[in-house]
Length: 168
Image (cartoon, rainbow, N blue to C red; front, side):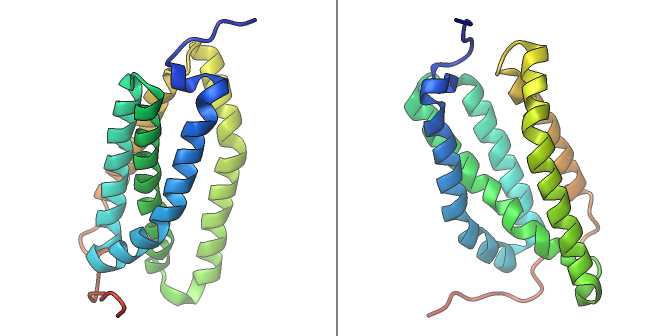
């Protein structure tokens, strides 16, 4: 039997709990993330989400127990929903409604390719590094790149044009 290295929460018998926490939190966070993006600015909420994912990732790197890892993964899921809910509307701002179908199709294509290629690539990364902790290095690099890209967009892009009020 191969030796399992890394934190106890990353072991196959219990890892499903942290993955469920991410998925449920992302689903629950999606509607508020979209509303907050429309109210306070989509770029701002996306940057906040990326920073939140980074913070949760740092916490996961040192999380000592399963309960802490589940809580941090839930935070990661909510933070993840912020850019996911706000990036499509920001992409549509690039060219307006004239080519909305083409932009939406390209956006979904990129997401699908990432969903197909990503897990296998991360598996190769794990094998090469010899540890699941290497995921945090990879995640930090991608989050830093995403943050820099979003932060470098021209001023006013992805910002709320008109305030959105809560129904009721």
